[in-house]
Length: 476
Image 1 (cartoon, rainbow, N blue to C red):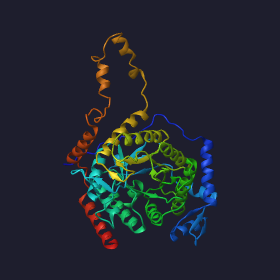
Image 2 (image 1 turned 90 degrees about the vertical axis):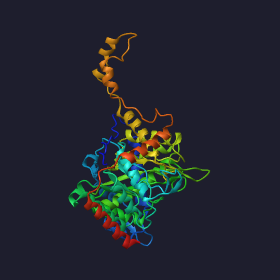
Image 3 (image 1 turned 135 degrees about the vertical axis):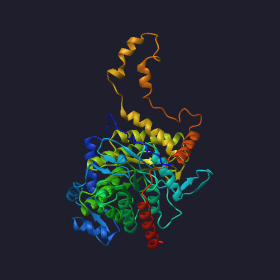
């Protein structure tokens, strides 16, 4: 039986903080421009290199190196919109990136799942994407959905099957981080058109967006950049993420890691604006810190959360929205470490003004799905939502009249004011449980049993099936 998707509850900060001073922001901006002009970035796509060359970049086609003069960078990025809407299948769940609210997504794209029934670790499948889309559809903390794991039972066309499972199981916006290459991108855009209904609505309320990872140090991925161009041509938002790793693929200083990662992202944002001025784009800095003993990529080292907030401020300095790192954890199982990893980075990114963030629901550095992890992370999300929302102070909440009426050594339980306001208090349904992990698992089971999002129209389902079949024929 279908049930209504609950309204979104974004984090709306009542106050803000600054991590970087204006001087520091200026230093980073100048450093990024210097890197792009004097060092450049590597890009192994002739199509992309030609676009750069046609718009004033200095391109070495033999070495596939692009150097971008500062005036070229600044002119191109000036066309990027600061605010826009990421649409959803349900208009009530559109994401208005207006700088006032933070919307969060699940993490992705993991490769293993703790089975919903057997609790055994196994390779992820399309059905896992579908189930978690349903869970995410129900949770008011989830503003948009990343296919949380990969559809490895459809190896050649996994990204498209992930979109199919997502569109069929949530009315919320979908953001893919796996649609790589122009061919896959064209099919994905066609699927988005089916959901939007027509091209006008597709551009006004795009139901699909794309995230592309840069390659550290200072390189772009051919398939990623060409898929981004296809999305931008259709009016679908595209963003670029740097995951530079302090000490291995980036300098051993945090500032050096940040400025190099920023240069990678900005080089890609500039390309999109050269090709399609005004196309919606976003900036995403999610670096790691190399552990000196194991060389592991740590996304949640003690200093790591600060870098995510720095990325928010850099994005805004360039005049674009951001996708912040707010939940990813290096923990191997849900527990104290995953909770600690999430809370500070989420609050800091919210208070620095992030528009979007991702990371709910995976552990082991974004590779393993415990179904209950997204419910546990959702609980943390709401804690931060209230902390960032600030305190309401007025005559009614100060309750001076009530305090006078009750007086010394009185009690407030009988007072109407108490009854009215206690009903407005929100409490975790996990913290009161004897075993929060077990309670979270039970909540996942309850959602899957009782919540069925509004289905696609039959004609839309048939069109998606047709697109998938065509992709299978071409790519298998």
